[in-house]
Image 1: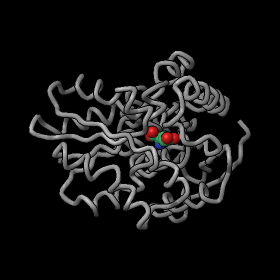
Image 2: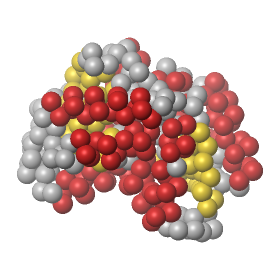
Image 3: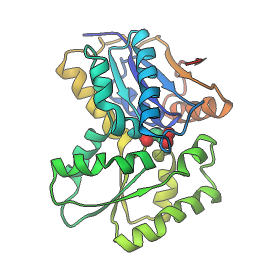
Image 4: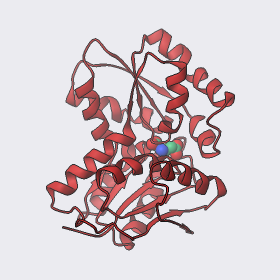
Length: 273
Ligand code: DGL
C-alpha cells in the first residue's frame, strides 16, 4: 500500500480527460496535476524543447513526493518516455501510447482501417504505428496531424461551428480517401471534441488514449502493491497546478471534473516553472 499522490502532467487541460477515469477506477488515489498552460501547445514544438519541459515538470512532481508519474500527454509520451524513465529510476513512469496501442490491437483486426489523430510531434515520431504494429502486425494505419485542435480546445472553443469546421477540415478528405472506420484520439485533448467527431462521423468507432491510460495506471499500481489504502482518498485535496492559471484552465477543469463529481475538492495553484 502507498498513500502518496499520483503525479499527472500535460501541456494544458488535455491530460485532465484521463482523471475522471482514474477517479472512477481508483477513488482512494490522490492526484497532483500539472498543466503547462503557459507553454502549450507542445505538439508543434521541437523534440529538444519538449524534452526540456518534460524534465522540469518531472522534477517538480518528484519534489511533491509522487509515487508515480503519468505522462497524460501523447506528445510527451511519444518523445520523452525513456528519458523520463532514466531520469527517475525509482518511480514508475507511465505513458499513454502503449496502453492505447494495446487496446487498439484488442479491438481492431486486419479488416479495419484505423486513423490516428494526433499532434504534429506525435505523428512525426511514428510512435503509435510502431507500438500498434508491435502488438498487431498487419493492421492498416493512417495518421493525420491536427495542429489547430489544441489551441482551440485550450480556448474553450468546442461546442460550436468553428470546431465543427475545423474537424471537417482535418477529417473529411482523410476519412473518405482512406475509407477510415476507426479513429484513435491520439492526443489527450481530443476527447473534449469527441462529441463533435461523433456527430459528424456517426458510423466511425472512436478509441481514446485518455481512458486506456487509467487502466494501465491501475494495473501497474496493483502489480507493485502501490495502491492507496481504502478510505485514503476521503477528505484529501487534489491539487491542479498550472504554469498560467488562466480562467479557461480553471473553467475547463471544473467542467470536466465536476460533471463526474460535483462535490469534488479541487485546489488550483499557479506555478512559475
Ligand atoms: N494533450 C497533448 C497530447 O496528448 C498535447 C497537446 C499539445 O500541447 O500540442 O498530445
